Image 1 (cartoon, rainbow, N blue to C red):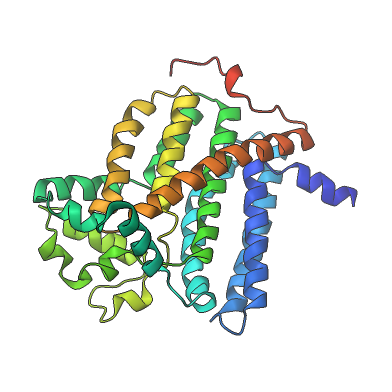
Image 2 (image 1 turned 90 degrees about the vertical axis):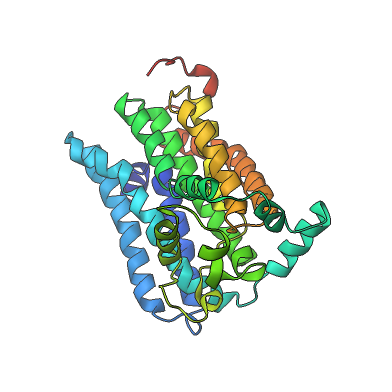
Length: 321
């Protein structure tokens, strides 16, 4: 028992989120193994992820080598993508009904029309090109914030930011389980003619293909709506972009001067480019607010458990990076 407790105390708060969420995924795979292809592979992979989280936390605590410190922070980045892809094999078999009809009805009730159709009236290639490029920066925003903090050795703020980001991602993934959806580019528009109806200039088509590939839609797919990732509500792009913007401001990072304009355009792009309904953005905002409220308590609770300093915005004195 003492050995288990000693290993647990080596975990940082963001490691704890990984361990808890991957334990949840193991349980889901076991419960629904009759519906999930390759469930045994995912169970084994998830166990390995948990073991790696324990191992890298232990290695960093017992060694002064910088490589373990770097790995401990940055293993989270590829793990987010791996988790996202695992959900592709879980959500639709477990939750086969899509709720786009609900999202569409709510948008029409609020706005009296489909917001994507309204924005289509103001679309033009240069704007589409800019917004598609900005949309593609999404996964880089948390990394940029992390680099800004890590470079200045602001390790407590770094711990907190990494925790909030991974916690936010995994909360949004729970939302995908609750209300699966595929988005307006399939339900309100013709996915096969999007490059013609909403053209860009030079990079738009390439970047769209990258997004499609990330959502398991290879080029030439005959029925893309049937195989696309269910990842509409809440809008993870909105939730995590707002979180990065908020953290950059509250942590007094100069990166906020980049995140505020880019993040605002990115959120607008989610609807303009037909990826999301507006209600998805509201969902992202609510999830973000809940994550910030609950996450701070969870983070400081674990800091106390592991005899590490608690985080308090009011005690941040570093203002110039």
